[in-house]
Length: 72
Image (cartoon, rainbow, N blue to C red):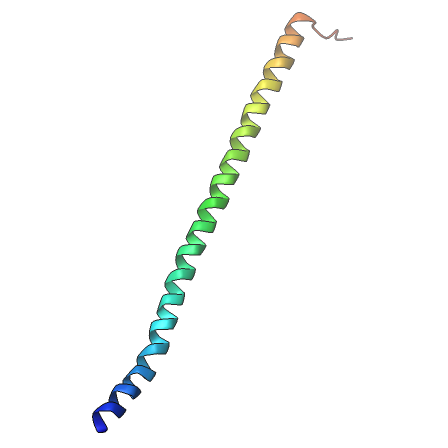
């Protein structure tokens, strides 16, 4: 009877520790995944902005070369 009681009390002590440590590990990895996903999205937006910026600057540069602005 004493052995069974000590096993139960040991489980009662270890179960919350296991649950909390598992929860911490899961939240750590999900946070890491979310942060890397946000970083990847920001990088895509940044690259698309750079691409658009270079296209528009090329367009305006060629337009200005063809039709120079009169300076009065």
